[in-house]
Amino acid sequence: KQEVTQIPAALSVPEGENLVLNCSFTDSAIYNLQWFRQDPGKGLTSLLLIQSSQREQTSGRLNASLDKSSGRSTLYIAASQPGDSATYLCAVKGDDKIIFGKGTRLHILP
Amino acid sequence: DGGITQSPKYLFRKEGQNVTLSCEQNLNHDAMYWYRQDPGQGLRLIYYSQIVNDFQKGDIAEGYSVSREKKESFPLTVTSAQKNPTAFYLCASSTIPDMNTEAFFGQGTRLTVV
Image (cartoon, rainbow over all chains, first blue to last red; front, side):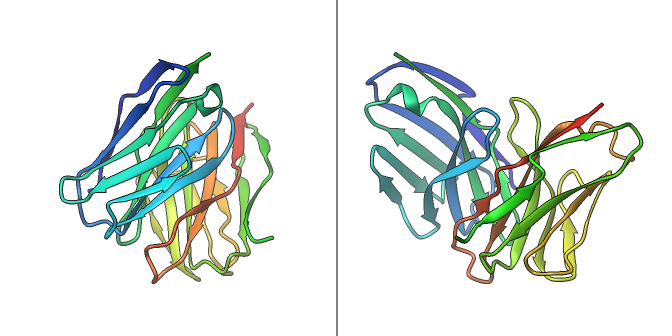
């Protein structure tokens, strides 16, 4: 059974710092991994999608990496801003299911 | 515009009642999913469907039922057997058999038992 873990569960950093969020999964037989952002009381916004054959994807200040063999992904946020404060979720897509981690609650201090 | 729509945004249920949450997509996606999110928690899979007239239980299917009569629609019924239904419910869709496309999510339905 696929299990997805995100560390840390919560993170507070001063504005302007670079930071890394971690996601690990137990079954490496995935098709892709997707990072989402969720603001309080809202739905999910897709940030980055990494195919199983890819090593990383970049969008603006965000960079996501994937090491499928070791079951790990990281989301790197450069030059953090208060507007980046949200919960970040990773999800892995297997044969038929999409399984989520519990998320990392990020707070950027002005 | 293509997308996935959930309704209603807020729903209140009395004890013992069944309620149905709507999920509609016009993305021509084959696969659809229902998730439940509790405060401070991630998303847990309730049911999923990869084709019309077929669906499978997820990790927490007890007390829920679904139907998939049309490709565009995947309604979720929260039955009276679900003892703790207050939660945020999210619907998603994705393409198959091309498994490498991203999943799209609706904006969610917040269900409260009163």
